[in-house]
Length: 502
Image (cartoon, rainbow, N blue to C red; front, side, top):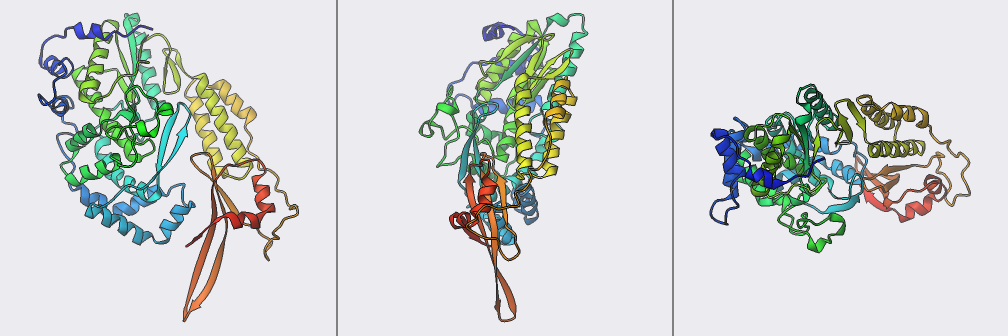
């Protein structure tokens, strides 16, 4: 492992030529005083010079009509409700589906749409992250945007961008790197090749809002769409950004920043993250002329010769700082190409791929959790098998024999025997002898408990009407024996539940 010294790259010289002049104008330029030249002009030069007719030469038209069309909103609703059909907010929204979609359409067309409240929670694997989840109504809006933007941008991204793209992912990224290091290992000068492994420091928390909107302006001239994106990322009540060098775990809300950052958990944040760093991809591929370059979200790899790596690092660091207002993490490193490198959960070397020990431990914990959830009846067989098969398939593409053996030996899907003899319950069964409840896991580790609906039938003249009331208790921390407690104290659970009339 080598120490990265940007000073070496600053002093290095590139052969003069058209490409060299562009590179020098973008990455070798001193920091300019405010008002002398806008950074957006540098970015514009980069995009016009580097992408060879990419998505900046043709812009999206009629975005307002396409996003706000009822057909697009209906398709967005169907995407947003997948795996969430029985959540309370989805049930309520579906009950007046057409009216609710028309309401969203009206707010968007009239420019009065406002983002709802976020639900905040922390995810601690693989690292501490603050996740912000929007309500169902806002997720429909985000899907409506994504359906129109993503097809246009995705086919203009570079081939070796693997984050949050259909047909890509961590496995494809690791396999691509494996093919490159195996190719280099067969070269006579294999020992002269190195891997520059870098990532952007606190990427989602440091994306500059003004810069992002300028990049979106390269995609479309529609001021309405720029307003909509600005409405999503510029929340006057909730800051998303972190000061440079700060960590989300030790930065209180009052110290967060309003002019930078995107909420982790938004569908539009994933798309914006790829669009934002596509400029880096184009710069490295077309200005720096690096063939062996790939990126997975904010992690990137450059495979190059040892005598070039310091210059490449300095150019990338300068472009990120000056054009995109980002910084490279100090954890970036240079590794000989013949040595194993950790990337997207794998250890990649010319001899093959294997899972990191940390990744294997995470898989085992996840499978134990799936096993318990199935035994307790919280998930169905299809979901449990799909999860197990996905992990099993993951191990088949690397040296994962021991993990496959562990899965085969230790994971067994078996329901717990139901307790047919109820304890002395305070509430007897109804006339049918049945008790109804449903337990739905949430993203923050809690569960929502849905109790049997009450259906009241009444007649208004010749028309029969129905009043359906659903009882729900949200945010319950599950424990062993919870279902037995629900069955034993059913009336008490019903009394403490929130009643929702449909």
